Amino acid sequence: MPSGRTFHADLKELQQEILRMGSMVEEAIDLAVTALKEQDVEKAKKVRAGDEAIDDLELEIEDRCVKLIATQQPMAKDLRKISVAFKVITDLERMADYASDIAKATMMIAEQPLIKPLIDIPRMAKLAQDMVRKSLDSYVNEDVELAMTLAEADDEVDSLHLQVLRELLTYMMEDSKTIQQATYLSFVSRYLERIADHATNIGERVIYMVTGKRQDLNE
Image (cartoon, rainbow, N blue to C red; front, side, top):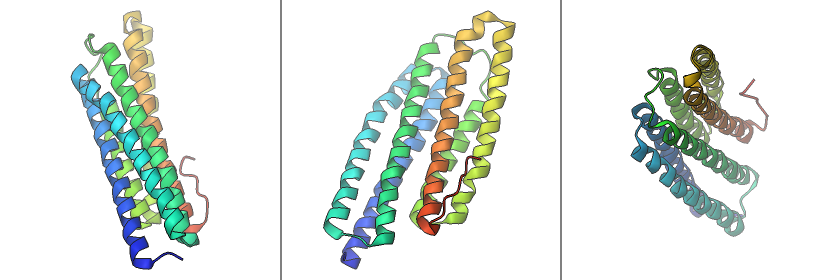
């Protein structure tokens, strides 16, 4: 049986670290897409370097989770909250990897003028960032209603992704010189779509943590 005050203080600290990791992921997404819009290799390199810091923080949080379980022996509900934390940080780490992949794509096409002004990709990025924030708020506050709102946002990201792909395909068909860049931009769109999926994964975990029911937010 855990010591109530100590355990809940430790759990609060754990959640604050997860929020910090989430904030780093949001910043990585923002910087990666800004680097793409501006064709800025130095900003892209910062995203790639920052991925290591996020990986390190993931390991630190994992260690906190293990110690919390080992020393406090939490009861069922609290144990579920810590086990969900393990999965949440895995989702966040994957999001950071995708942000790094966007930066890598930027570095591959940075010497080329953009084939079109980027409109939908930055919109996708803003939606994805918002989804990361809401998914973590829903976890910390055990807010099922907030978690449920992620489904609609994910649908919007999916719709934008398809729109981007259709538009890029048109460019490729009309001018073969655009194929390389259009392919990388389609990768970027896909990475943002996957980031949104990971945010909905967190929402699903929150719903299960609070209600014990499994809910698919990616339908």
